[in-house]
Length: 376
Image (cartoon, rainbow, N blue to C red; front, top):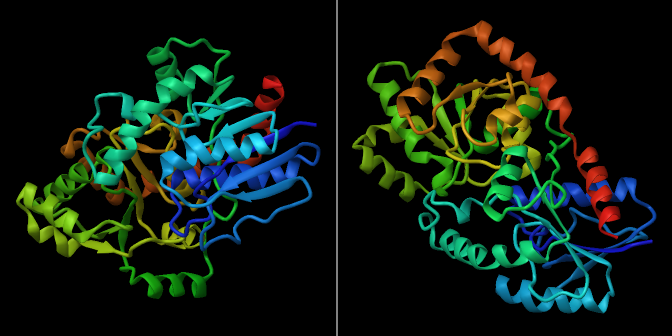
């Protein structure tokens, strides 16, 4: 029997994002398939603490809330050492420098080590990038195994650090089983009222991180509007209006604000009904290590437009329409092509529903268990 610690610091926070959901889904699926090993789940206590329940062999260890570097570098190893664990799995790119156990590190990406605007974004994002730039080169040397989420990112990590195939392992993310096409009119109407959704919209998931390409999306919409080809709203989640106002000032098209719809932060369980009512899903990121929303949209029967760069063609394969994310004209052309070609939409929906079947959190958990066994 192994004693395995999993760092899942932020899974109890209300507003969870990509890496938080990956850690949560991993743990939930490990609970289903592993009844032998003993697990210690290290978290910060927060208001959404019912999303994960302890079991006989899964203990939830709440570590006091402190600034992240102190929590990770001081408190986390103290608790891990007290539990005398064999392996600590750090799930969010960084890890303690001093640790008695063996280390498994999930390195989702190394974007912050590249030249792609790592010093741009919010102060919180910039501070996080500097911390990762300091920590990651040190902890990758200490890790017994590194897990990443696509072959694209695996090759990027190997090229940057010079590691071989045995050190770095690709384990694909999955898609939650609740992501499915919602057809219940009552559910759809309730979500429509709750978030004031328009009748027709393209769904775009982005934020202030430069890689999410908000500027490129807005420029593409401006192109479409000037050509009278913008026939529906763009739905955006949890993006600050002041930030968008500044972006629109930069492209000299404040009129676009009338074509944007905002619905704030949306809990994960409400997302399927939002996807299901969209005419298309737009995901033209400049750089991604995986792109879980691509699969979520496909699982909900929505045609996807995404980028022809980094990991996105690896994940979407032939089930998406591609654009050059660095070229707003290309993004605009893809939007116009998809919304005006019904047969293309139907073809992409069918291919997407087939494609998504290749990705599951159960497989993710099984492959992660294999890594634990290889380490010990």
